Amino acid sequence: MDLDSRIFVAGHRGLAGSAVLRRLQKEGFRHLFTAPSSILDLRRQKDVQIFFNETRPEFVFMCAATVGGAEDNLQRPGAYLYDNLMMQANVINAAQASGTQKLLLIGSSYLYPAQAQQPMVEDALLTGSFEPVKEFYSLSKVVGIKLCEAFKRQMDLNFFSVMPPNLYGPGDKYDTRSAHVIAALLRRFHEAKEKGTQEVVIWGSGSALREFLHVDDLADACVFLMKNFNPESFPDNLGMPWINCGSGEEISIRDLAQLIQKIVGYTGKIIFDPTRPEGAPRRLLDSSRLRRLGWQPTKDLRKGLEEVYQNFFLADYARSLEREARKSSAAS
Image (cartoon, rainbow, N blue to C red; front, side, top):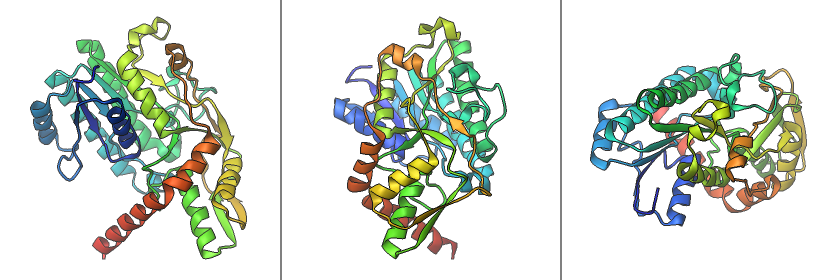
């Protein structure tokens, strides 16, 4: 991949996609293709095929996905399964048909079994059941990864997936339904501070351990891997076309909540509700394969959270409120 390569970033307005696009622009790539969902619905096979035939991207970053928090996953399992299945199948198939050299699909640590041995290694995939809260999302994403593997076996294509942990950073969504852990906590504490609410209730006991990665670190890793990764580089892993990309650090939800409380400046109480689902007790990726390639994350969690809240939160939060208002107006 060089500066004149033709590159398509799918999902360029999302958290991961926008970070990848910023990273590519910063490096000076000259031929970057994007398409908002209002122009190109990746669930429509014919439209995707036409787009690929017209643009002929040599490299594809497949960052588009329907994602969200625990509550939204429980309420809309059909959307998570259908949307992701269709988008991935259409993009991956169009890429192989149009001659794309290399494709990177964003996966997730949630695709590994709920009771996988920790830290989670790549060959733990499909060795147990999914976490129930995100079962349908996980199933859809695994199908995308296996489709990449299938085309690799059939046509020797270098299509692969990156498996990050929970992400945060600029461009995050703070919508009530779709916010991830950090985004949801930032919104709750910010609104509680603004309204003078005496307590903030958080799902679960707070003991669950999670790994977090700044989205700019993920973007840096994605560009690095697009340049350097070949599954055959790891004969000990039988050429598996997916690779973990984590920070290597974990924190309990309780400690995370207290950290965000301090950053936001909220002085009320934190109440944990153990009757609500909190997922697997621990999720930590083994990212040693990526480390052996020479990549390391650079963002410290505390500093990263402070930067997000101070520099990006208010603008991203305002956009989330606008989206919620439009949806509410449309529903009425």
